[in-house]
Length: 291
Ligand SMILES: NC(=O)c1ccc[n+]([C@@H]2O[C@H](COP(=O)([O-])OP(=O)(O)OC[C@H]3O[C@@H](n4cnc5c(N)ncnc54)[C@H](O)[C@@H]3O)[C@@H](O)[C@H]2O)c1
Image (cartoon, rainbow, N blue to C red):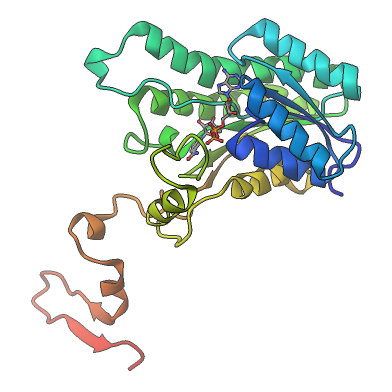
C-alpha cells in the first residue's frame, strides 16, 4: 500500500490513462477525487470502483479544467471529503484543433490551449496553494506528450500546447522546490485510449494497428502511464523534480528513423557486421555475426 493516507486528485480521471491511474492509486490505498468533464464516464468509473469492493475511496466531481471556479471547487471537494491534497495529477486532455496553420481559427486555438495549458496551470496553482498551507510537500504530475518534443508527433496546436506543459512543469518545479512540492510531467507516446481509438474499429483492431507505432512490439496502455504516475506520486521519486519522463516504447528514441524512411527493415542491421572505412581508400570489412 504505497499511497496509504494519501489524497490524490486526477483530472480526466474518468477515461483513458486517467482512469487507469485512478484505479492504480486506489489499489495502493489512496483516496481519490476524480475530476472530469464527462459525468457519464465519471459515474461508470465510480461504479467500477465500488464494484471492486472499495468503499469511500473515491469521489467524482464534474469539472471543466479550463474554468478556475471549477478547479477551486474540485480542490474544495478533496478537502471536504478527504481533508487534504497530496497528489495532483493534471491529466485531462483533448485532441484540440487539427488542421493547417493558415486555416486555424483563434477560437479553436484558444479551446485547445484552454484545456491543455490553462487547465494544467490552474491545477498547479490551486494544488500548490493547499500544499504550501499543509506545509509537508506534495507532488504534482502533468500529462504532456511526445508531441511536445518535436513537430512530427501530433497536430500543430496540440504540439505547441504540450511543449508549453513541459516548460510550465519545469518552471513550476523551480518555484515550488523550496516547499518540497515536486512538479513533473509524463510524456506518453501512443497509448490505446478513447482518444486514440477510432469508433470505426474494435479495441483489438486498434491495439494491433498501434502495435506497429514504435520499436517496442506492443501498444502502450493506460496502465503504463499509471505505473509512471505512481512512481512520481511516491517517495521513490523524491529527488526527481522538473522532469518530463517519456513513456513511449522507444518511439522518440528512434529519432529520424532513416532506415524506415528508406524502406529498409530494422532487421537488416542485425544480420551482419560491417566496418565502414569511409573515403579513406581502405576496404570496408564485413563478417557474419558471431564469427
Ligand atoms: N492517448 C495517447 O496516445 C496520448 C498521448 C500523449 C498524451 N496524451 C494525453 O494524455 C491525457 C489523457 O488522454 P487519454 O488518452 O487518456 O484520453 P481520454 O479521452 O481517454 O481521456 C481524457 C479524459 O479527459 C476528460 N476531459 C477532456 N476535457 C476535459 C476538461 N476540459 N475538463 C475535465 N476533463 C476533461 C475527458 O472527458 C476524458 O475522460 C491527455 O492530456 C492527452 O492529451 C494522450
